[in-house]
Every structure is written in structure tokens, then in C-alpha cells.
Length: 442
Ligand SMILES: [Fe+2]
Image 1: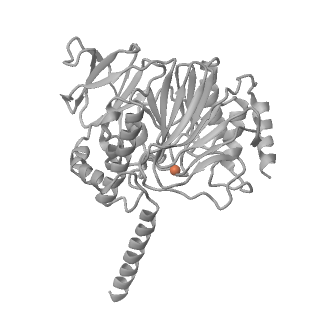
Image 2: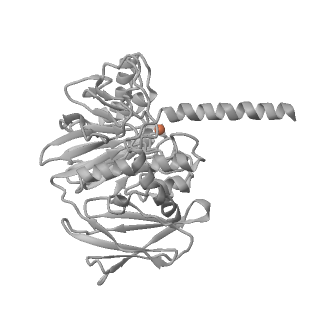
Image 3: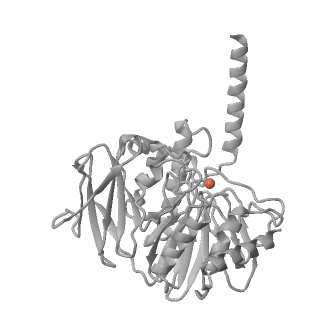
């Protein structure tokens, strides 16, 4: 008995010490006062079991909605009037979801640029208060990029205080980015939306910012999302592509907005043929889009690697991007901001792909840069402050700025050059590209 007590005591001390170490890696932009103001909202956030998520549809003018419910036969309607008069009902597609719940999926198409719409949906049979959405233009527009909100990462995720402060940090970042870019067309999240892949508590916390009732977010499968169905149950992604080795969470997908093709890769599936199929389907469906932008959780050119480190993620994925003339890759996972030079064939080049990874969007965790920064990194920022990135699409330009959320200061700004889409991708060029990347790393 005494021995068991001793072991338990040692384990408790170790757990507390580990929790302190993990906590020490967090860093929030919000103040104690912000946190105290946020705490009373927590109960309402956790009481909202039918919180809705919005995602970009296949094209501008289409939005995907999704929510969980306990009952079948849920409804969705949309109107141009705040009082929901003259509303139109839209079909709800239901499927089985985690914990015996039901996933309700809606796609609304044909929404007109510049117009405001209101939507309402049934939450276990009762219609919600109407929420407002505005359809943004698609010639000049802004897309916001964040990653790794990872609610619950800053300490022991079973403790409410840990979840509350991470959620406060996430809400603070969303408030800041929407204050700076209130007319953003949509946002992209680079993955690890929650710490635990099956946590409804963390999912509700992630969806809690009020702005997300109006802002579509294209979420990505991260290593913390991959092994449960919750990600796919609550996010209604467009153009999902078949993957032979799909994650429980789902697969890669694609969509367009303006002159840009956005491809979201599931980097937890390292089957080359699966990811190649996602990219090929997207590119074949939209061969003439000027910009080709990939989002994936893990970064082929991670700032956590030095020049001498071997990267299987680089070998597999950047070889594909070389073949398909991808302009820009957005990533997360490493919890620090970095941007590479233009890369092609494993080396810096005149034409190729820029790899940008962003840090924690909530402040729940950060990684340090290695002692020697790799030569391919041209900009990095490992200060423990949440950041967000704005992709500003002009008529013929793409300018990118990243902001720290505490001071609004721009920490990095650059223009993306169009990596002209003239390569021929086929089995031979992909294999050749893999060997070229391999030889650049050994
Ligand atoms: Fe991750």
C-alpha cells in the first residue's frame, strides 16, 4: 500500500512538473483582464452543442455549413431579410457522427457578390437566431491564414482553466484579424484545430469566436485531428477526393476563389498516390487558375530542420509541388513562423514554390528555432506571440503580410511570384522529381 502511495506521489509530482514545463512554452497576447472578461462566456460556449461551422464552397458564391445534433430531420433556411421572411429552405444531408450524434451538412449555392444574407437552422428541432453572411468580391480579396489553435495544448487538457485560457487566446486572435480585415473572404486553418481529435469540448471552444458564424474557414487535417471522425463530422469540406489510405478524419479537398485554386492536403496520409490524385483532380478541374495554393499541416521545409536533416515529408510532397507548379504552400505544426526562399528540386531557385508556416493561433504552444537556421529560411519569428497571415489578392498580384497580435506589427511581408503552370506532370516526371529532391538532401 505504502509502495503504491509512493509511486502515485512521484507520478503526481512528475505530472505537475511536466504541466509546468508545457505551460512555460505557451505565450498569449491577451491580458489577465481579457481572460477575466472571457471566463463568464465559457459556460455559454460549452452549452452550445449545436454550434455551426462554415467552410468555403466549391466556388465563390457557395458556402458549406455543418452542425451536430441529437435529433434527425433538422432544417436550414436562408433569406435576404433579417426577419427571415421570404426564406428558402435548403436540403440538409445527415450522416452518423461521433458519440451517436448526427452530422448535418448543407451547401448553399448561387449567393451573389456584395449581397447580405441571413441563415437559420434547427438545433435539435428549434430554429436558431438568424446569423448574417456577406458574399465578398473575388477580383481583389483577402484570405486569412492561421494554424494550430490547438485548444488544450498549453497544459493538462482535462483542466477547465487550461481550455479556457487557450480558447481566450484563440478568440483574441480571431478578434484581431477580423478587426484588421473585416471583409476577408474566408480563412484557412493549417490544422491541429483541437488538442484531442475526439473532444467535443475542444471542438466547441474552437468554433466559439462569434466571427466564425459569418466567416467560412477551410480547416486542415493535422496530427491531432487525424485519428477520429470528429473533424469530418463538424467540417463540411468541398470536393473531397478519394484517398485509399484516408485518415479517420477524412481526406484532402479543393476549391477555387477568384483566380486562385486552393488545395488542402492531408499530410497525415503519406501515400504519394493519394496526394498526387488530390492535386491532379484539382488542377485538371481548374487548369487555368493563375494561383495554385496548397495547405498542409506538416511543412516540407520546416524551420525546425537544419540543412543536414533529412525530411521524408519534403521528399514526398515538395516533389509533387515541383511537378504541379504550386506557387505557395501554407503549413503549421511547428508552432513558429517561417518563410522559405523560392524552392525547386530541393534547392533555392528562380522559379518554384514558397513555403510559409505559421505559429500558434491561440498562444497555446511554441517551438524554438534550431540553433542554426537552415539556409532555405529567409524569414522567421519564434517570439512567443500568436500571429496571423493575410493573403491579399490583387488583379494580378498576391501580397502576403503576417502580423503579431499583441502590437499589430507586421513581422514579414512579401510578394508571391506566379510559378507559371507549364510543367507536364505524369508518373515519369513525379518519379524523376522524387529522385531530384532525394539527391538534394543526401
Ligand atoms: Fe501538429
